[in-house]
Image 1: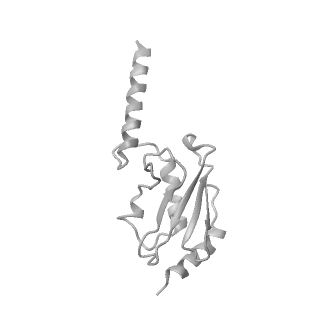
Image 2 (image 1 turned 120 degrees about the vertical axis):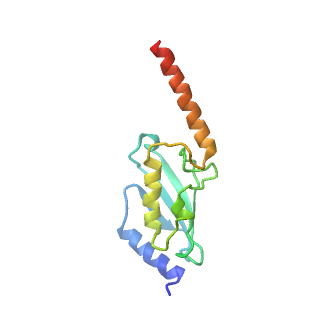
Image 3 (image 1 turned 90 degrees about the horizontal axis):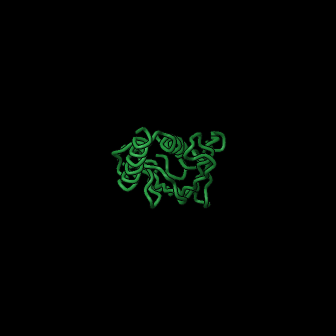
Length: 145
């Protein structure tokens, strides 16, 4: 059976060769159980020029249990809570041992660049964006008169 350390070592070696222009990864301790991630240069006007840092904690029973990821810098996105937790089902109910840290980073970049939608778990952000949409709609309607 593959231990968490063996799997993480493989993933770390793969991350050196499977780099991305939108994210980077680096272990922060010798045990390779804590990593720092960065998301940057996203091709989306909402995130242009911004750099977001992530803390990644890998449990002892990884890959059978998902890693804990959270942003340590503020991200204005409907899938990111104020405390930095990320609302992606593959980190919770839809986790599978086939996922790697690199695949999760690709998913996070995808979620950050997707068009905003409503009805997600982050109710504070949904309320804020819906309120702004209504305000803009009212302003546009008044200008059209």
